[in-house]
Image 1 (tube, rainbow, N blue to C red):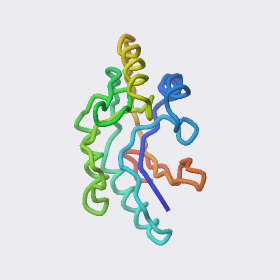
Image 2: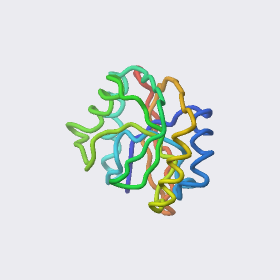
Image 3: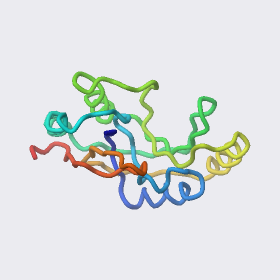
Image 4: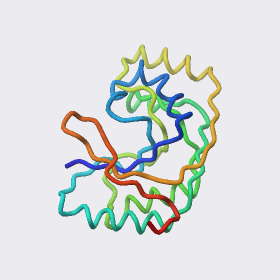
Amino acid sequence: MKYGIAFFPSKELQDLANSYRMRYDPHYALIPPHITLKNPFEAENEELKTITDKLHDISKNHSSIPLNIVKVSSFYPVNNVIYLKIELNSELLNLHSALNSGFFHDNSDYQFVPHITIGQSLSDDEHSDVLGQLRMSKVQHKETIDRFHLLYQLENGSWTVYETFQLGKDC
C-alpha cells in the first residue's frame, strides 16, 4: 500500500488554497491542501507498527512548526505547478530531515521546497496566465502546526489519515 507523511494547515489556509485548487488542481478531490513532509512510499501492513513507533519517536523529539506563507511561486520550468511558498525554517527542515533519513531514507528526486500546491497539470499558456494573476495578489499568512499525519492512498486515488502524531508530545 502507498503511504505518505504531511501537515494539514488550518481551515483558514485550506480555504484559501482550495479557492484556487477548485479551478487549477485536478487532485482537488483526492487530498485536502497539505504540506508534504515525505513523498509517497510503499509499505506492507506488517511494517506499520514499526513505522508508527518510529513516527511517535520523531514527533516527541520535535516541537511545533511555525509556518509563514510568503508568496505565490512556481516550479516552472521543471513542471507547471503553482504553489503557496512556505518560508523554510530550522524546525521545519529538522523535521523533514528526520522523516527522510535513517529508517525513513529519502525517496525524493527533488530538494525539499515546503509549499502548498494550488495548481498543477496546467498547459504552458494557462500556467503563465494564472501565475501572472496570482503573483499580483499579496499572499501572507502565519500559523503554527503542532501535528503531522501518516496518510494512505485508497484504491480510488484519494488519501486519508492513518494516524496523527502530535509534535512534542509522548502519545
